[in-house]
Length: 535
Ligand code: GDP
Image (tube, rainbow, N blue to C red; front, top):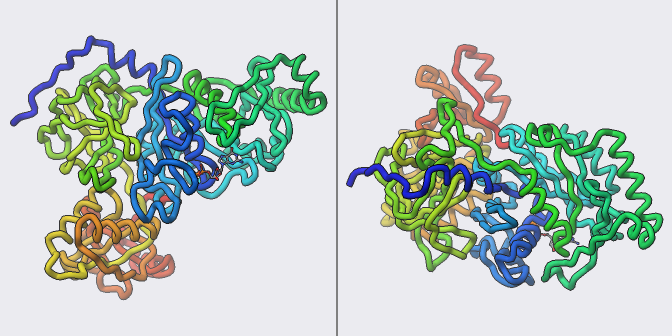
């Protein structure tokens, strides 16, 4: 079979028109800021699920859609990443899920290559936390515009103006609040909508399980009802105005300012406002630059890249899924596209929309959309797919690992399963696999950014590939890129090891920065370059 040119039956211009109504984003936050709760609330608001609790399940709540591994359930963290799509007003919203735990930040970074905007969710009591800051830095680096949501305003927390100062000082972004809280954190009466001066009154519903009615009142009615508390909000609003904290679309898209909303995700308050802001202000997909910097326009033939590969999601679907973000053209299920890396045809007969355990066939998709391709055994993270005109998108960054361990099979008879499992985890990006002649094929080195990735690898090797493994931690903490010419000198110095990553990079592993510095001082001509750090 050859990759027959697949001309779309869709009218010309469809891709451009459909892209214009797409909003593809992810929520970035520190664990516990309320990301799962907000995701539920957004979905509920768009009425894709009947009752909050059906999408994300944690202890005490119904359903466990995104909690697919026992380990994940036991820890109450979300390791999987997928996309939730729903219509809101005349827009199509793609919400990409990101893992909450810092050890899986590499996964989160890859998801951020596939979005056009991000929502930075901040716990009102805790302010900007470590993980929020790291993810923020990635968004800034990638030029992703950020909408900030201050969550949990129904609980005691910091002062609103203080939070604005914290955002300015720590992120360098100027916050431009679109809404302003009426009542301090813990005494949430509602928000002053700075765009029209109205009052959106907050009314509680039991457990936030239904959409909270937001009563809309005029400024006069609000003053009558809330008295001093309303007046204080108005005064603070004037203060903000005087300091120039006003929304400006160009500054927002340019990463200079961030619109801010106040919310209580658990009571669904502020969620509709967030959807409106995403539809009204967040950017739609635009043409994506290829590896040479030339832009592939939205109206060009289909193209996409793989930003996540996942398998063994649950017992009922033991298969390998590659998530692609569509960059141009129209995707039609069944079309035969070309896999850029191998130049081989790839049939898209089994294309699905996946969110946790929920799967649905996708027949048509457009730029900005995420499609899960089933049985995508040949596809790896970062690969490009295209129809008609070839394109190669820039490779996704792999981060500098900080933890290393030798892996070996606990049962010698299972070397085949062992090999297959390691290969798969490597191409999914669960771990980086480093090899050397000295170590041999049977005991490569696994390298990770966060140690919990080791646990996932060990668990999956045993339960999914039926190849129980043992890991022996190695004393290295730093990996530097090197070259053939530097090899003999590096190899001859004690405590340092040279290995080759699957993508061909030669890496020198050092126990600490002193060992690295010593070698660099002794041999100044050596090639030793840092890899991209994950923080
Ligand atoms: P995640 O780790 O960021 O996904 O956080 P979760 O959505 O699991 O929320 C962490 C905890 O905060 C849970 O107990 C939620 O019920 C609670 N929570 C989330 N949003 C709010 C909120 O707006 N107000 C209050 N009081 N609690 C919230």
